[in-house]
Length: 274
Image (tube, rainbow, N blue to C red; front, top):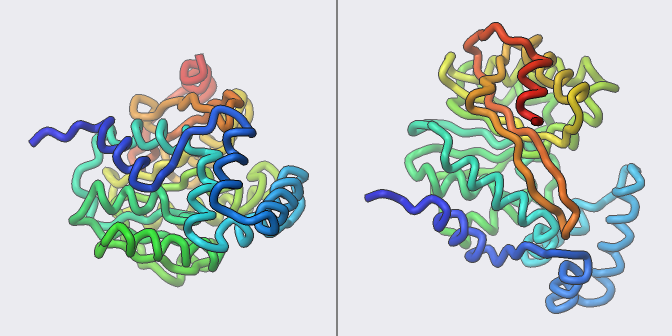
C-alpha cells in the first residue's frame, strides 16, 4: 500500500499537537492556555539567557514535563514539519539500527521509530529532563523499538561498537553538544571521527542538519566532515526553508557517507544556496 507521505507527517504533527505559530503572540498564547504564570516566567528568563549565549537551564525548564516540552516545541514546529517532509522522501532502506544525536524530547526520534517499525532506534542526550520527556512520548505512542540513553558525546565510543549503525542523525544538535565548531575544531574532529567509525559501511548515512548560514560557514562544515572521512552526497542533500514564529530562515541538511567523492566544495555549496 502506498503511503501518503505528506499526510503521514501531518498526522504525526497533529498527534503531538504541534502547531506552526506565525508570531510570538500565537506562541505565548498557546503556552498561557496550558501553563501557569510561574512556569511562563521561568521559561521567559531561560529564553533570554539562552539568546544571550549564556550557559543556562533552558532545556531543564522547558522539559519539566512532556506537555510543556511539546508546547515549547511549537516554536520550531515549521522546521520539524519541513524537515520530516524532506526526510520521508529520502532513499533510506530498512536501516537496522538508527542513532539520533542530541535527541532532546524525542520528537524526531519517535518519528523515525514510527517510520521504521523494524528498526532499533536509539536517542542519546545528556539532559535528563529531556530524556524523561522522550521516554514518556515513546510510551504514549506505544513504541517498542526505541530507547533513550544519557550519553555525553565525549564518551560515545564507550557505548557503541564500531560499525553499529546504518543511520546516524543530528538535527540541530551538533552545536548544542560542542559549541561553535570553528572555535573547537578538535572537539568537532573527535565526534565526527567516531560517527564515521560507528557507521556500518559505505551505504550507511550520516544526516546532519545544523545551524549554519553563509558559504564560508557551510563550506567549513563540509570540509570538517571530509577530514573525518564523511563525504557529502550533494545530490541527496537540500536546503530547507522554514520559519520560527514568523522569522524566515533556511538551513542546509546534508547526507554524508563513507563513499569518497571528488567535488568542488565551494561550487557545490554555492549551488545548494542558489
